[in-house]
Image 1 (tube, rainbow over the protein chains, first blue to last red):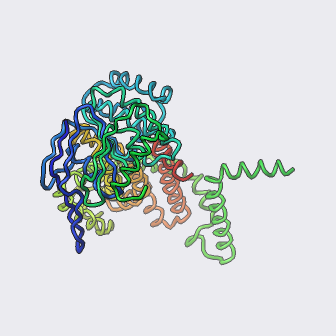
Image 2: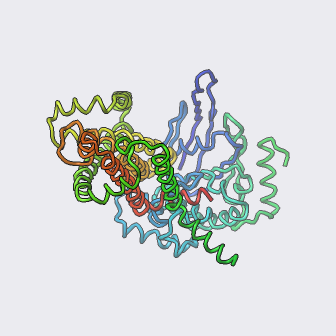
Image 3: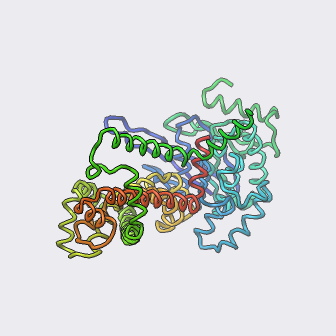
Length: 242
Length: 268
C-alpha cells in the first residue's frame, strides 16, 4: 500500500525568482493491486508525486510511504547502444542476473506485446510505440511491487496511443495480483480507461480536488456513456467545462 | 544519353567525399606551379611542385624510415593521452572537488605555448623519446578531456533517475550508462588529438635532439638548404595525420555504429 500524507514540496526559485510550490499538503492512498490514474494539468506536480513515490525526491513536509517502485519515464530513454532485448533486461542485469537468464525473461513479454523478432533490433530502428513497449517491459522486469508510469504515451500519435492504452490495460490486468500501479497522465480519457480510481489534481500547487472510483468492467471503450460521464466529472473537478 | 549523364553524376555524388578535396588539392598544386613559373622565385626559397614530387620519390627510403619513427611516437603519445585524459575526465565528472581543483588549471595549462614547454621537458627528462612522448601526450590530453567530459555531461538526468529506481549503484550507473555515452566524445577527442599530435611530434623531435623522425628530417633538410626535401617531409607528415584521422573515423563507425545510426536518423 502506498501512503502519501499531507505532502508539500517547494522548488527554490532561481536567483531573483520566487519559490515554486509544486505540491501543497497532498494526501493519497493507493491499495495493493490497485491501479490509480492521477490526472491534472501540465505543471501540477504529477511527476514530482511519482518521484516522491519512487524515492527520487524527499518531501519538504509530510510523509511518503511506498513499497519499492520502478519508474517508466515519459520518454522511453532506451540506451541506443543496446538491442531492444538488452534494453528490456537492463534492471535485471543491474541486479546481477546473467545475460542469458535475463534475456529468457524478456522473451515471453516480447511475444505478448507484439515485439517478437525485434529483440536484436536497436532502438533507433523501432517505432515510437514499440520503443514505449520495450520501456514498459524494462520497468516491469525491475520486479518492483509498484509501477510508476509517467505519462507513458504522451509522445505518441493518437492512433498509436489508443492501441498502447489497449495493450497496457491487458498487460496490467495480467499483473493485477502482483502490482500496484500509479499512472500519471494529463489525458482524462486515458485515466478513465485504465484506472480503478481517477485522482484529479489541481493546477500548481497540486492538491487532490477529486477522487473518483471507476466501477466499470474491462475492457472499457471510450464511447461507453459511463466513461464519457466520468470524463465530464473529472473535467468539472479541474474547472474545465466538458 | 541523359541516363549516362545521370549515372555519372550519381557516381560523382557518391564519391564526392574524397573526390572534392582531391580536386581542391590539384587546383592548389596548379596555382602553386603557376606562381613559381610566373614570379620566377628561386627554387631555394619556394620549390616547385615537381621538385617536391621528385624529392618524395628519391628520398622515399629516408622518408619512410623517419615516418616509422614519428608514427610510433605519435601512436604511443596518443595512447598515453587517452589513458590520462579519460581518467581525468571521469575524475572531474565524478568529483566536484576534483572539478574545482583541476579544471581551471587544465585550461590554464593549455595557454602555455608548446615552444616554451619543449626545452623545459628536455631539461627534466633528458634527450631521447621520453620528452617527445610527454610533449605529444600534453598536446593530445586537452581535447580528449574536454570532449569526453562534454559527452559525460550530456547524459540525460532522467536516465540516471531511472537507473536509481533500478537500484543501480554509482559504479553501475557509470558502467552501464555514462561510460558508453562518453565513448563517442572520447573518439572525437582522439580524432582531434591525432591531428594535433603531429605538431607535438615535430617540436619534440626538434628540441630533444632526435637523430631520426620526420621532425628531425625537417630540421636537417632546412638547415642543409634543401627546401624541396623539407616540403616533401611536410607532405608525408600531413598525409600521415589525414590517414590517422581517416583510420580513426573507420574505427569509430565500426565500434560505435549506434552513435552514427542516431545521427543519421536525426538528420532525416
